[in-house]
Amino acid sequence: MARKQLNSGNAPGVELSKAKINRKSLGNVARLLTYLKPYRGKFIAALFFLFLSSLVGLAFPSFIGALIDTAQGKHANGYLPDTIPGILMLAFVVLALQAVVSYFRILWFVNVAERSLADIRRDTYFKLITLPMNFFSNRRVGELNSRISADLSQVQDTLTTTIAEMLRQFVLFAGGIVLMAIISKKLVFTLLLILPLMIVFAVLFGRFIKKISRQAQDKMAESNSIVEETLSGISNVKAFVNEAFEAARYRNTIREVADIAIKGAKFRGMFVSFIVLCVFGSVLGVIGYGCILVSHQEITFGELLKFSLYAMFLGSSLGSFPELFANLQKAVGASERVLEILGEQGEAVSIVENDNVPKQKIAGNLAFKHINFAYPSRPEVRVLNQVSFEAKAGQKIAIVGPSGSGKSTTAGLILQFYHPQSGEILFDGKPATAYSLTDIRNQIAIVPQDVMLFGGTILENIAYGKLKATKTEIIQAAKRANAHDFISAFPEGYETVVGERGVKLSGGQRQRIAIARALLKNPSILILDEATSSLDSESERLVQEALEELMSGRTSIIIAHRLSTIREADRILVLEKGQIVESGTHQELMKTEQGLYKYLSGLQLEAQQS
Image (tube, rainbow, N blue to C red):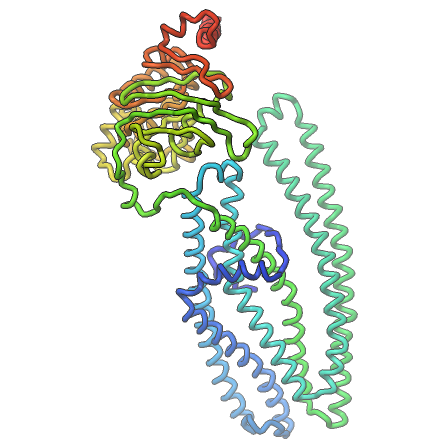
């Protein structure tokens, strides 16, 4: 159906799974149909014009038959002119009417499709970005992106094109049978005896061929995965001299693709042979029988021609129904996946910018009271166990410990990405539930180990900390973060595009941009999640100077890998297996002979000396 190409949302090459058509699944589609409500006037008008266009299309075989009969001196149809110029004139008037109707039908359908799809995409995206972190930890980004692109495109096609096309084909089918019966009941009866048998056989055979085609697609996808894996890890392939292994793996998969495709070609060849022999043979048989009726003067030659054209309409309609039904099944499956997102419970975060202004000020006092936490996806594994500590406003609290001890989880709980199963997190002596999520997150900033920058300019990335900041404020923040000098060295300066995820910048440069972003936000509580662990010495020095500027005058939670960076902390918490096993200043902890902190510090000192 060429009409699909008018829609902006189509995702070519994406094979969507199908779902069974039942009352529940149709109910899901009906829920999405509510998005047509604001545009129902144009949608109803487009449906009416579609119905009118289909009826007008059915008139043309009558014009052709009338022209043939009139040329032979017969005037069987009293509702048409009895002269060739008269018939032609009326036909051109009807043709002009159909042209106008078709124009508005397409325009209005596409208008409704694009606007309703935009509304669904908007709501789906808004819902996605307000969902809790646990939702994203259990799903891949590619899967979620597919729901906004491929799934919604399929829903769009069904809400407009597929449903409209099914209605159009039904009108052509029903109208064709009625008009054929008016011409000759004998011919219609003969055709209806043969056609259903051929349709059933064609559908069953088509499903078998499609199954083979799907097998070939799956194998091709497997071969593409091999290429993607090999090229992504080409350094490993070469380092382990496994070029021959990868070549053999790809060659074997491609051979299987070719074998399946050849098998499918055999059956497609058989199917085409069946179509040629049976379908066209049946058509010839019916037309031959019609010629007998013409010779017996039961029908005219023009009526036989009309019957033949209506038979073509009938065959075309029947042939399109399997594909349309398959598209409907795909849409049902897609609607279930989209509604799954729309039905999720989101966080209490507004998508209206003016609603996100902090209403309750946080001075910076933070406390954990007997916190127990396990990730919802792994409830049996307790990550934090009876964790309690307190940070006064302006204090520097460092958290250290082996990998997997719960350091980054603590940061996620402060940001309210997750909520503890028991215990309380307090801000300024009040439980976190007394504040809105917007108030808490607006007054907390984090500088992670792996800084993720957006693909825009340096200016835009720094401004992400305060969207309404002036350029002067942004430059001032960059200077305080030791970033202004390297930014100014770029030819485009602050307008330098950083590339996807900031790939055009070094690790130290990305860290300093993240620090400038946090400085611009001016938070009450700062979280540094191993912010210098992967930097060289010179970059670490520059970043550390910027961090000192950032930590000045605000509560700082420092998750550290290099213990040398936290010696000046007001308090150091040592986590092991989700519990605080030691607490104190650097000097106090170093006096504990068998302490974990002293052991970790000794290991790092040995590593530096070696």
